[in-house]
Structure formats: structure tokens, C-alpha cells
Image (tube, rainbow, N blue to C red):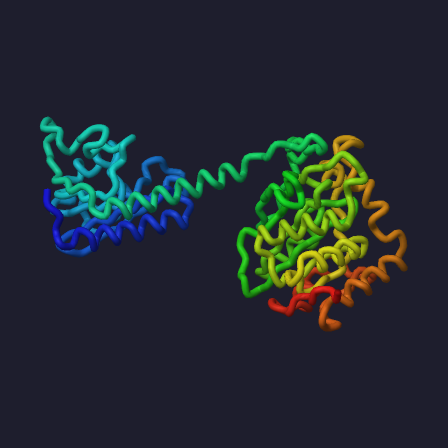
Length: 399
């Protein structure tokens, strides 16, 4: 059949629905139903969101059209869909007596309008819908190709990287029963440059408003991201982007076997690589006093990325959470090494914090609450109020 003047216009409306499906995490197929030159219903793929195996774009659009017109018989209507319909959707269109079908890209695996079978050309059926194939086929196909390419890339990225021979990785079963903090997702990244293939994990808010700023939470010498709930909840409630890495040697991150592997310079380089990968800029680092030397090394290494530091009392996680990353002594090289890297007294912590504060262009670049009596969650709320969403980063050290 020939293409009509308005076919491309209505197919672009179907493409808009396909793009909406992408944003919803669904396979990008979109459809519209047109009667007498006007769109009476739209639909996009929604089986995941609706827990409905029949919620293909065409079915959703047909249901909407039937409701809008007050009749399941859609005589005289045209269905525009970005992908050749499957047998289920083709059958529904025939049952609805749809007058005309216009589709974009062919579906060589499940297409029922000519690619695998041709239900519309079956002479034994009692209704015959006219079919127009290939309208904006390239554009419709590109949306699908881009979606699946991105999905494959994400799948490859999510696959665990091989563990280095000189490192250990805590079995995932050790973390069973330990919930991810509400509003956060878990992520992993293989450190290629400074880390030489070590895998680093972190928690990150699933929703954030860029104008609310960015907070990077460093755990203490015996903790990991999963023990920082007292900070993470109030920081996320502010709408800011919040990330909490497990330092290499801690939490879910890979754990080099030798204590001597751990140095402040090495960890600062790893964090700088990770921050660049995550595009963390103008960030406020939230840390316990014991991590002031590490924060100082990071400020000097990740030039221009850190705008301030909040030194707070570290939340106390449950014993199960503290023990989970370390099934035996071999996994504890990181905590053992930190005994020599962290300040050994309150005086040492105060000196390290003072040196850290000197890295920022103004006195307001650092907030020190760790000696106060407020709970860690309340201190985190004070940090949100203290630091504006944007602040000039620390200057590079003088040469």
C-alpha cells in the first residue's frame, strides 16, 4: 500500500511514545491510534512497569482508543507503531477491525506482519487490515539499537571484573540481609589507571537535584559505606547528590592482601580516578576526624574537585555490618594498615584538620563538628545548612 501524506507525522508521534518508554526503562516501542486525522489514543511499552506481559505499545493504544470511542470495534482507525507488531498485537488489531496498520522498523524475530508470519495476509481470517511497512524505518530502528547497545554496555560494566592475584573480594553472600540505605543504589567501577584493575564499590543517591550540591562521604578506618546510614539519610533528604565509596580494602571493594600496599598517596590517587569517572565536581567531603590525612591527600590529588570538608562524628553501625566485609584476617589488611595511617590521638587529629582547613580559600571551607555532642544525623543536617550548593574549590598547593 502507498504512504499517505500524514503517515510520517503520525509515526513521529509514535516515536515520541517510544522515547517515553526509554525514559521509563522499557523497550522503546510506541504507538498511536488515529481516526479521521486526529490521534484518539497513544501507547508505549509498559510490561515491566505494569507487571503485565500483554502491555505492548499497540495493546495499550488499542485499549485507550476503545475507551475513548466507546467501542472495542475500531473500524476506520489507523494504528501507527514504531516496530512491526507481534502475533498478539496483530491478533488484537484484527479482532478490533482496525482498518489500517502503519509500522516503522521490521522485527525479524517476532514480526507477524510479514517478517516471520503474515497474519494480515492470511486469507482464511475474516478481516483484512491494510498494511503499510517501513515508514521512518531507519529512525524507528535507531531508537531500538541505541537502547539495546546501552543495555549491553551496562550489563558488561555490571559484570564483576576478575580479582587480581594479589587481592581478595568479599563474597556477596556476606552482605545478605544488610539492606541498602533507602534512596541509594549500589555501583561498581574497575580502577584502570591508579588501581590496576581493582574494583571499587560505592553507594549513590538514585535521585538528586544538581542545584542542591554534592557530598562525598568517607568512612572511618573500621567502617565502609554500609555503616554510614546516620549520615546518608539526612544528606539524601536534602536533595543533594550523595556518594559513599568503599575505600579499596574495605566494604565491597577489592582488598589487596598486603598491609604495605595501603598508603595515603595510593588511596588519594584511587579516589581521584573514581571522582573523575563519576564526574564529581565542587563536592563537599564528609569525613570522620581520623580520615583528615586522607582528605588532605585527596584535596591535593583531585585538584579543583573539592569545595569543602565537613568533619563529623562517624555513625556507629551494627556489629553485623562492621564484620560483613571481613570474613577472615586475610581480608583485614586495610583496617590493619589504617592503624598506622590515621592520627593516633586527639591532638594529631586536630593538627590534621587544621592542615586540611588551610587548603581552602576561605575559613568557611571546613566545618568541624566531631567534638560536639550532636548525633551524627543532626551533624549531617548542619553540614547541609552550612555548605551552599556551589563553592569555589580548593586551590592547588603552592609549588
